Amino acid sequence: MFEPTIIIAAAALIGLAITATALLVGWRGWLALKERELAGMNHAPETGSTIGAARIEISDLKERIRKLEAIASGVDL
Image (tube, rainbow, N blue to C red; front, top):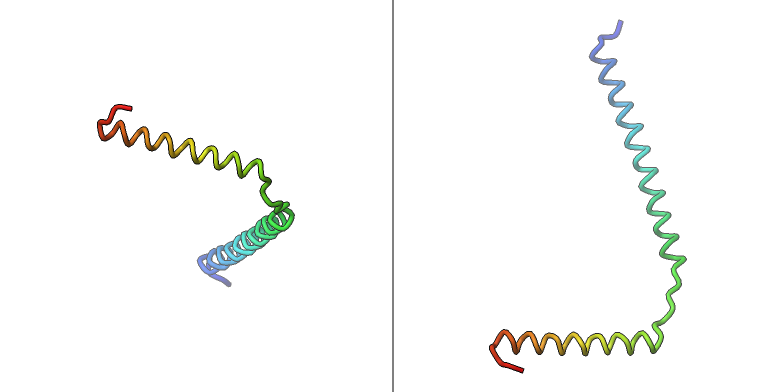
């Protein structure tokens, strides 16, 4: 009645459609999860102590860079 190649092709097409649908549902679920995670994050402003610590760290890094540049140019500190 039906040729085996038509049956195999139809089964493959149905399998592909099922797989694609499952992947799409999973993708949408993952995006919804990430959206809820982002919406639930507490976006509190930085406190003064962390800003001060960051400034000290930046100052320390600038000092290290200055010393490395002096070493690279051959100047003895």
